[in-house]
Image (cartoon, rainbow, N blue to C red; front, side, top):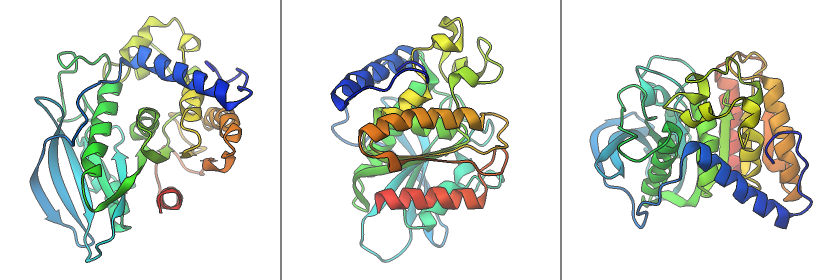
Length: 318
């Protein structure tokens, strides 16, 4: 399955082999997934803590890679319950100045505080910085990465390793949610981390074939994303697309929010991505676990859309 028009596999055995090919194709473009030691959580430290009433917000650093500290926020529900809570990875949108501060209400932008809002609803959230954005500027070349995308995936996986070590976090099933940049990175991370059982992408994707202004060194081919894309003459030559990635998540829960007024990603293209991936979900007998909505809004994440997304995560994890 390289492109949306390709046929659907006839059975799950055939699909398993195709899924492996998708993972390999993604790593050919993004670079290999690191094979670092994951026998325990990463080293981490808290450098600030704020009681926000219904939750406590911790500012932390953790070592996803030795000698390289990733900044993140952890939001912990603030009540007397001893019940373990579901954990959610909250990935921030593009914000060149504020970065990860966006999703905890510290950037001043409206409709971006999904990490703190989910904590208010009883989820434990972790929100890492995206590499090569705002203050988080790791030397990805020295660390051995071939793309900012793969560095982000590894940072996110190690963030969940950290969350998994908390006694207040339930089990090995997590959610991942993001807007825009965070929307496609929730999918990318879930492709390589099967613990993510609920994936939400808002304004985060359409087919690479339909991406606007495809030029070398810009868009998807920037260093902080996937610079190897410049090796391909056209989007049609890329060996995978979003329908492949989402299909590889089956039968896990996935909700794509593709607003009809989005100026970054075409909602019709996103709908075709989900339609195609849905064939594989049906093969798993899990057609209802892949959903798409088309809000009447621009490239944004308004309250009513966030409500649908939060309810989806809760329906999968609780």
